[in-house]
Every structure is written in C-alpha cells, then in structure tokens.
Image (cartoon, rainbow, N blue to C red; front, side):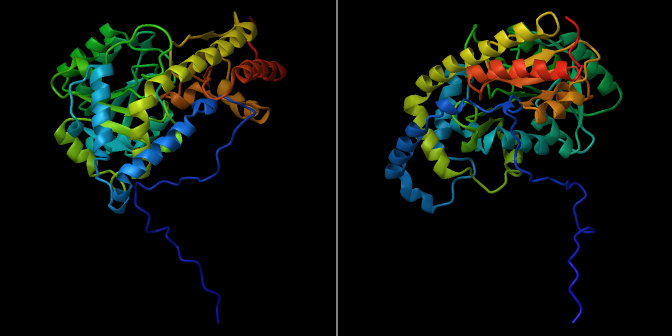
Length: 400
C-alpha cells in the first residue's frame, strides 16, 4: 500500500493570513526588551484571597458563559474609576472588558479600517499596535513629536497632505501618558490642540491610556476623552501593568455605535470570568495601596538605570527621564547602528529593542528602548554597565 501524502493547505489559506511563529520567548541575562511589571510586587496572595471570596459569592455563575461585555460589576468599577481618576463621563454600558488592551486595539482597528486606510501615530509607536494595524492592511503614518507630544503643526500638515491625496485617515492613535516607547506625557495644551485639529478633519482619536496609574512624579494631566463631549475619542486601558499581564484583562470605552461594531470582532465571547471575578474583588479593596507600593519600587529601579546611563553614556547619548511608566528612550549619535548590535548584545547578555522597530518608516536605528520595570535596581544598573562594555568591545561606542 503506497505511503499517504501529507494533506496540503497551501492553496487554501486566506489571503490575509500570516505565518506566526510559536517559538518560546527569549530572555537575556539583563532583559530590558519587554515591559514586564515588577514580579516581586505581584499581589499574588491578595488575588488568591479575592478569588476565594468572589467564588464563594458568585462561583455558581461559572456554569454560564460570561456576558460578551464582561462581568457587570467589574465594568461598573471601571466606569467609576475612570470618572474619578480620568474625569470621564460614562456608565458601565460604555465599557467592554477585553483580553488585555491588545484585544481592545484589535477590535477597534478591525471595526474602523479597510485595507489601504491610513492611521496616524506618534513618530515612534508601540510595536504590538503597529503590527496589528499592518496585519489588517492599514497604512501607518507617523507624526513628529517632542517632549510635549504630537507637534501640532506637523499633525495638521500631515492630515492636510493625506486628505489632499484622497486617502482616508481613519483615526489618530496615541499613548498620551508615559508614551511607549518614548516615555513622555502629552501636555494639556497639546491634548486640546489634538482634538481641535482632528475635529477639523473629522478624524477620531484613539487614546491608549494603559500606563496612567504608573505615575510616580509630577502632576496628572486629564484624559483626552474628558476634553471631548462629542464621542470623538475612543479609549482603552488595561490591568496588565497595574496587576499582571498574565491576567489578560483590559477594557474598551467607545460610543454605542462603535462598540456594537467592535464587538463583532471579539473572539470567544466574554473575557475569562475566573480572572474577572478575582480582579473585581481585588481592585475594590486593595488597588490604591498596591499601586503606591508598585510605583515606589519603580522609581528606585528607574533611578538605578539613570545612574548607570550617566556613568557609562554621559556625554555620548541622550535620554528622557520618565515621570512614570516603564520605559527609557536612549538616543545615540547618528550613525550608531543599535539595530545591527541588537542580536550581538542579546547573545552577550543584554536584551533591548532598537528604535527602528517602533518607527512606521523604519527610522531610529541609533535609538534603543530600555524597560526598567521587571529587573531589580541592581540588575538595571549592572545591565546598562554591561551594555557599555559590549558596545566598546565591538567598537560601536561613540566618542564622548
């Protein structure tokens, strides 16, 4: 009997399907590449106790599939928190729980864009969002920024140019608080200018505010959503950075018409009810205290990285001092190819992402993003020092 030939799917794949590798995540000895939170401050005991309490009260409801919008009591809490902390006027009906902010972003992208449509971002943008935009056929165009956020004149000029070319700009995506990867927070005047300019062109704003709670210095700036009363601003947040990414919980806030469209792209119905019950019980009683403890640890870690940068790269590179969040953006002189160095540095113990990975146009090879949240303070200091040694060893350390 002849041997059976493997069945071939080659002619059956959907046109927009892409190959996705499933290799396990790699971690260097000094892992500054991915923005994991502080493992020593994960509220494990509190989450276990909260889950037990919630299951005793509502555990029998696990016999039902969860609501597609997510656990009603947690949506109510999110609405109350956003009203209190971000000056947003909304109810639980305006909130959908999602599998992290990544699912919220994916839902909005699919609901608003067709292949060839344009979305605008900061000149360097979170690479996970950029990948999703491109996966669904968007053209990603960046707008120049400074330490205050979008440069308004460039935003206006970019919108004028694109609309003049007959292109459809579907939204402006922004991370206005402790921007990933640049680390700045958008000033209040720039937030107002962003709304004014986008209103002129009939373009919504997609506000990704998932780092807002991680402020450890400076005064808060109100949300862009709170400055708008027309429904122009779509908003998402996450529990990943204030609790744990492994919980896979976030939320989307949008007008009814957009939520109804976005929900059609939500995979698998409601979010994990088991996780939602634990988070709902925990945040009601412990979140404020937990965030304070977490931020106290983060500022020590940030300062250790800053000290090492100053000692090893002072007079050579430039960097922003973030007042919150998890990221340090470091710029080396033009011609310093940190993209070419990335794999070498990883193999010799230091992981980072280079700037071109965050740029829609592939700029920024002389820049790197360093994440300071997961390692302890000593590791942050030692790792930056080791990066300097690696660069010197391979002859890519610019002259001071």
